[in-house]
Image (cartoon, rainbow, N blue to C red; front, side, top):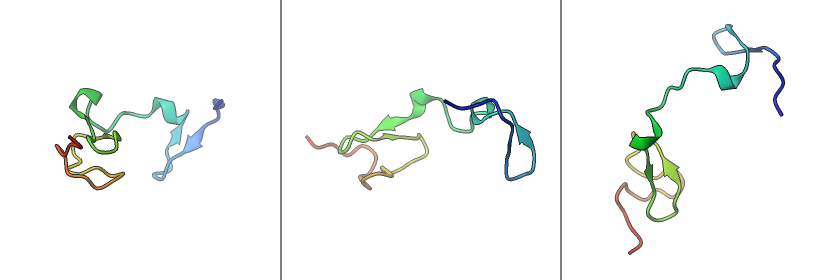
Length: 60
């Protein structure tokens, strides 16, 4: 379990914990699941970062 200690990010700003940081990715509904390995990819990924399969590729 994480403690409530303060962390310092690379800009030198104090953060109370990583859980309170602002989300920088698109909402999950824009993400996609790789049809080859079932890895959950971000909407910006044109290919799976786990297995390199192109977006929309299926094993069927």
